[in-house]
Length: 230
Image (cartoon, rainbow, N blue to C red; front, side):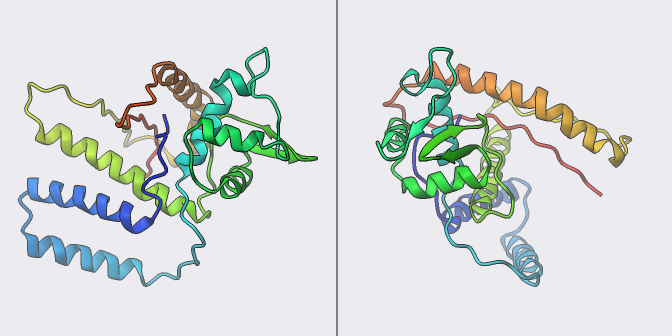
């Protein structure tokens, strides 16, 4: 479930949080400080050798995703059948939706982000929801901040489960790995996840939405991802 806060927008802030988690994992692995610093310098030097495109802004994707969730779950913005109703821009209905989702960011930026992701359509001044999920184009400027934030969240889970006493409740963390599955099956796997995985995440989203507390200060999330090592 996306957090209802406009936080961690800038990549430098998100990167600092990620490096903090990596540093803690390095400490648990007894990697000396000088070695860890040298490793980072070497990796960063190699990364900066590749050309990078300019970044215009770094609005976090979860801010816009939260607007989509609100649109699909808040009866104020739904039709009688439970589907999101079209919202008029000139009447400020889209701004009302953003406020209901506790989003303080620029509404125009959110609208553009949702448009770029193909999650909405704007026709004759009316905004229509095309799908519930926000699938951000990885070339979008906001993708950098999102990638850093997701990396931080996963690293935080790993560190917490390693560092916490065995008697404490562990955060759920599992992975399915196959070393004999050929890469040619990747399209089929992605097609399977686009339906089954998306359905699973939407069920979780609904489960979390009905249990929300506007006074809550914590952020809880669940992620599903695919990795390919070549």
